[in-house]
Amino acid sequence: MSQYTKEIEKRRTFAIISHPDAGKTTLTEKFLLYGGAINLAGSVKGKATARHAVSDWMEIEKERGISVTSSVLQFHYDDYCINILDTPGHQDFSEDTYRTLMAADSAVMVIDGSKGVEAQTRKLFKVCVMRHIPIFTFINKMDRDANDTFELLDEIEKELGIATCPINWPIGSGKNFRGVYDRNTRKVLTFSDTQKGTKEGVEEEISVDDSRLDEVISQEQKEQLLEEIELLDGASAEFDQEQVSQGKLSPVFFGSALTNFGVETFLKHFLKMTTSPLPRLADCGVVDPMEEDFSAFVFKIQANMNKNHRDRIAFMRICSGKFEASREVYHVQGEKKMRLSQPQQLMAQDRHVVEEAYAGDIIGVFDPGIFSIGDTVCAPGKKFAYEGIPTFAPEHFARVRQMDTMKRKQFVKGINQIAQEGAIQIFQEFNTGMEEIIVGVVGVLQFDVLKYRLKNEYNVEILLENLPYEHIRWIENKDEVDVRRLTGTSDMKKVTDLKGNPLLLFINSWSVGMTLDRNEGLVLSEFSRN
Ligand code: G4P
Image 1: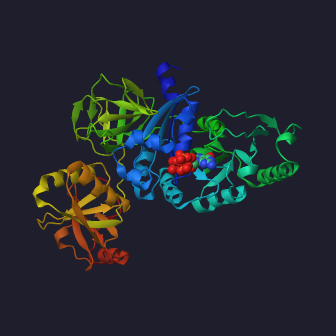
Image 2 (image 1 turned 30 degrees about the vertical axis):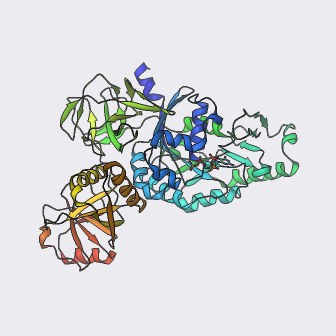
Image 3 (image 1 turned 45 degrees about the vertical axis):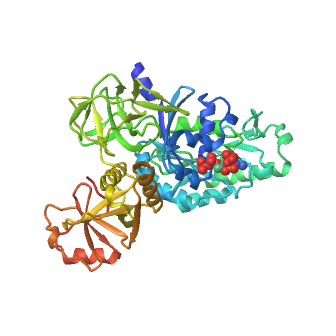
């Protein structure tokens, strides 16, 4: 195997999703600890520090205690080169999660053992399923009283509609947590309190048939374990790599990220079961990651990662070949040859400039405002585009009014830039020549973000007047339809998006059907594909 093939083979790129507070940040930190990317877990003061480093520009995150932006981290473990894509924990930002998942080859879902499947896990999980990527489950906080293990698995299967296959099995929880039993090796990994992960744990692997186990777990617990194993072997789905790869079966692991327990075991298994960079679909066919020519697509644009620099970073997932900073690339949508400016990667809490990177890696490049989400960058001479990232249909709409009309220019600039980043969608009245702007968002919290950012970054104050529309449809066959003559229902509003595409807003869902009935040949879509 050539060095080049080896580099790509050893890459693992995955997203991590959870309901806020389930332990995503803690688990990520422990991964970094094992990868040697940070020294002592105790020195990283939980999420506050981690979040401060990647997105301190947004006070909203701190105020609300939720992460609304995603970040990327790279570290090495064993022979693997791992790229973790963090996702916002709040469902109002599930569109951002979807884009991030487009850049991932698999997902890790963190669940709080005492809470089970929570509202936002459900929504984010649905987004995962749309991508058909392997999903791994880490049931966290076993050092706290957890729900019954069978019930937890049942809940995942029923609520999320995915089969589960426990790779290990917990022995007790809370004060009675004694460790996990590995179903494959039939060994128990014993739990010892690491004082919130600051002390190295003394973990032991003891065969379930070894009498030494009796010193660690009570007779009652042992009997229960044996009973549960028997039940499990008879009832649960068998591990099937093919099913896992297709996202139909989720391997489940138990542990306690805070105390470091079960994290390394999970990481080891997970790295074997998940995939190296996957081929990607483009308009020229499937592009293999091992292909020599460099190619990548933009999945995220983020402004003001660093307050002092007012910069805008476009995040790209490299899909094939090797990126070399010194070489020119071709930006397909911009139809321009260029050098990517200040390419960088995030390593633990530092950003550093990269000279080279391989398929599977994520790089951030300085964006002077030329990239849009979904854009393709490839080797000069090649000209193809990766399949687009669909725009989610906004579910909430508001009319934007500017408080100080003198600042029109800043306002237009700000709102357009924020829309380009994909945080909001903006629409204008169709053909009326009015300058009124309507904003559409997937989650209402995005309205707050818009207000906050316009004020803080562009010094523009706005008023938002909520509109009752809930349903949006793009006109698929816009070239065949005379939009001015469309006759709809009284609640229908005609608008255009940033690219000038016509679309319709409705208050009631039945109006959509009614409008289709009244206009023969009209084709409507919930997504914008261009
Ligand atoms: P998130 O990124 O999914 O939102 O969760 P995060 O890791 O920030 O964890 C949320 C809270 O849960 C934190 O406590 C964290 O210490 C705690 N936690 C994470 N994993 C475990 C675990 O395995 N066991 C227990 N008992 N707790 C866990 P916090 O009080 O909100 O923050 P902090 O002050 O401890 O940082």
